[in-house]
Image 1 (tube, helix red, strand yellow):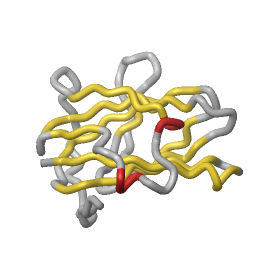
Image 2 (spheres, rainbow, N blue to C red):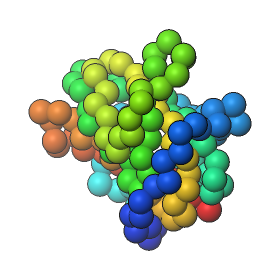
Image 3 (cartoon, one colour):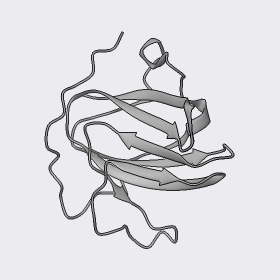
Amino acid sequence: MPRLGHCRPTRCQARLDLIHAVKLDLALDGLARGTAHLEPARFKAKRGRSVMLALANRQEFACAVHVHGHAFRLLDRLDDGWKPFWLATVVVDARQMARIAFLADNPGKWLIECVGIGHPETSRAGWFEVA
């Protein structure tokens, strides 16, 4: 069972290096139900590297997605920037995608949780590691 890191305040810098970021697609319905600790890491990132995730919700209901240990920026749909605030949770509408970016600055193993809005029985999770 992976030992999950303890939450520490994230250094929220004004700009993220998206050119050299780790870029990944993450299908929310592909996360584990209750067995995330038995699954391999969804990804690994070196400390100090930017991470961009495309969160694809292929389900028929919206999901609240929470990234533990890191604050992230919600990227604009037109690829022309990001929202001017930091988040830890984002709602991804049914059959939609949200793109986020964060600085992998907290070493440890961290959960990404997805809870179906109005469908809590569909909760899923995966984890990633920052080293």
